[in-house]
Length: 232
Ligand code: DX5
Ligand code: ZN
Image 1 (cartoon, helix red, strand yellow):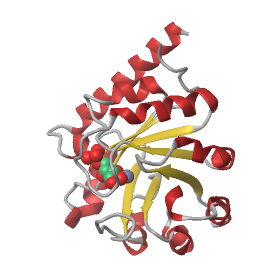
Image 2 (cartoon, rainbow, N blue to C red; image 1 turned 90 degrees about the vertical axis):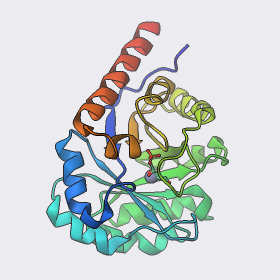
Image 3 (tube, rainbow, N blue to C red; image 1 turned 30 degrees about the vertical axis):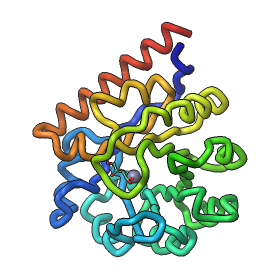
Image 4 (cartoon, protein in one colour; image 1 turned 180 degrees about the horizontal axis):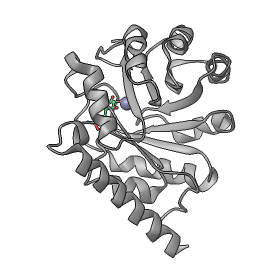
């Protein structure tokens, strides 16, 4: 039986990691014009993950070009507290750090909120979900990675779905985001498990028609919600 579905709005947020980064603002705009709800911006420092992307100076340049878009910063960095002030100043809306990177997640969450951003906390595939539990009441979103963080275009790990189910069963109102390999073939199981924020990178960015793809993703989620409501 499907896990109880959230009472929350379901949102699709493209990751622009695999977009043409030489025209980042235009690519972000293209995603928003195609019906995205928010943008998931992947920051990598070459330490927490074996890849590099961009940091707050780029976010600061993007902000005036996309004034009303919700920037969900996925901070794949070894020292998350180091960048809180700069990201807030750059115009980030939400700052999602990884639990694996800090000894004191509560302090990191406090700093993020004091800086005026929403706080998200994420886990890598090998990290047990129960470690998130003490922090859920103080964050705005939890992120369940469905690939090893570092690169777009990897294969979705369906064995992460029990983590999503566990969280949805115990925390009916929390925003649960899934990230990695989420696309037309995999979003249904994410929605049925109870996720309500869906990061989709290559599936949307590389699509010939991102608008149609986003709409198709949305339809699959809506069907999954309907199904889970009928089963309840
Ligand atoms: C991976 C990133 C993801 C990734 C998603 O480390 O956090 O956001 O770019 O891209 P796809 O959907 O292609 O896996
Ligand atoms: Zn991400």
